[in-house]
Length: 133
Image (tube, rainbow, N blue to C red; front, top):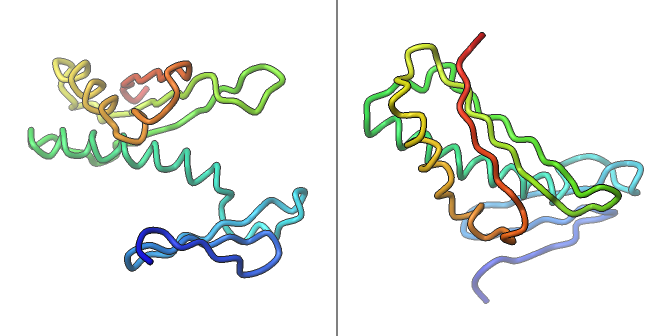
């Protein structure tokens, strides 16, 4: 059987294997887990960051722009009183030498992320670029 294989190694731990990779997950102690690995939702949010990040990195690589000291921050806003996402904020902090003429273009590139494009259209994605203080 091909694809993804999910295993149950104990307590609240869930592992997912595919190709030559294994992703380990667990739950917080207050949820009965051991906190030995990220929770699945955290990996989901991380995948949005990794996807937007590779688009930003590729954008810079093509233009020979430095990604030294570049940071991408992710913040999730939930609907009031619910566990449903309302908005995901991506903030790309660039170095002082990043050309201002590329800000809109790198935001467009990051918003092309395939993971983000799988989200329900009611979930807003706000992407911005900031310079160091």
